[in-house]
View 1 (spheres, rainbow, N blue to C red):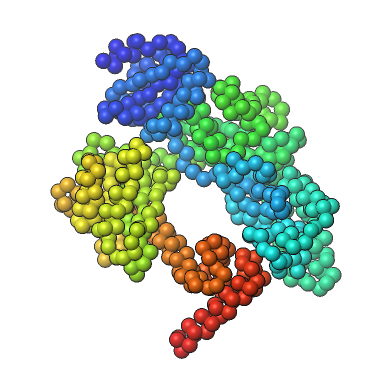
View 2: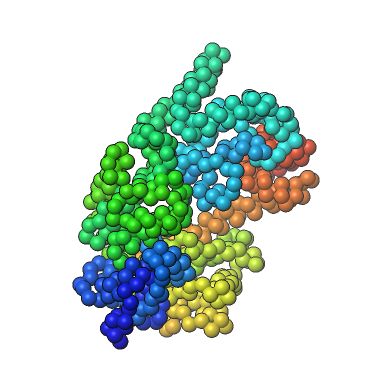
Length: 595
């Protein structure tokens, strides 16, 4: 059947979709010549990830397009729609931190992730920075050196920052335009690469503190200057045109691609991103998929340098940004540096990557065979938390092909607040899968509940009402809170698993992950709930001000230690005084009880 179908494929561009025996699309690809590309899977010996893909192919379909670019666009849309198991998934689902300069209504600086601001206009982004710590430290330093607006909200009176000269009092005063413009010019100048501005400003402040005999503050600024010098020393100028660009270097060996992306901003190397993944289709196709996914979550600079193997015309047409393959000069040297780093990363990490991948795949396969499942691509795990009977929550984590899929994790706040694990399980299972049926989203091959037979019954009861046939198992912990028993939801028998086996460590890893995620959510809810209960009934504090206080201080103890000025950054002076008095009397009453 497949042989006859392969002969009928035309020599035209298009997208092809590989399916398993259940008709599920497991891979989406594109080709300039569909006939040659699809036949290549079956007319030669395959190895690694491609061999595993071919072993699962039971059928295929294809869609002919008028051009290679059209095939590329179709492939991207189909991958988004079907999320096939063999298409590349980025391991890092977070975007890098940037420093955001907000001009209106008041000049401010903040650390932002690219995804949270890319759709907003009138915002200036600088970065990416190698980590959030570096970005925050620079923002804090700029806030100390320049009188920017620092508080949240829009208070009616000036706060402590104004009185110590670190704010121009935007809420009450009208700063001179010339002062604001000079400050903005300095800050943007530094963020655009003029290091001398910041260094001179730090030295100026240090001298002022020293002259006023405030040696402690002068020493603090000296440490900041040393930190800035270290950061700037690492950012050696590599290109003199000061253009924002990324440089994508790759190295391919033994079925694996290593990627090194260098971020150059204003001619300086500010950071980088590395990844290693197995080839499924071929080098070009997998790299084009990878680049597409990467720039869905990251800023696309003015120019991107890539090696000559990649189809720059297709990438440039899709992204509407310059993709260039330099042949000589400084740009060629920077690209070669990225390629060399990709090669070193692959050589250093290859053994570890293979061992990790082998362990994960073997453990997932063992679990599949242990439970007599035909397919085990997706596992949903649930856990409940209702410490002390308050703020009951549930959470779900997802593992796909052995790896956590964190963008699929979900949190659930229960509709009741009592210690009732079985009803909590019924509620969370109904909410999760009733919605999945309505929205036609992906369903799991296995559901694991963190509990025994009662939890299994509660889960299966709801699945039956939804007419869903999904395997359910339970994971019980021993008295030391460690993974102990796996219970088959069909037979309710305990499945013996050797404690030193891959599958046992795999189950422990999953159980620890769902427990960690649930407890973290529970602590967040409990913390906010306890603060909210303290604030209830205080005159002048309604839902919005309570939310603002929680966001600003995070805990009751932080509010108790806050000055009046700090409270006034969030709430009016009269309300702040009332809150201070209440917290003081509450603390004194608590101290009396403890005596």
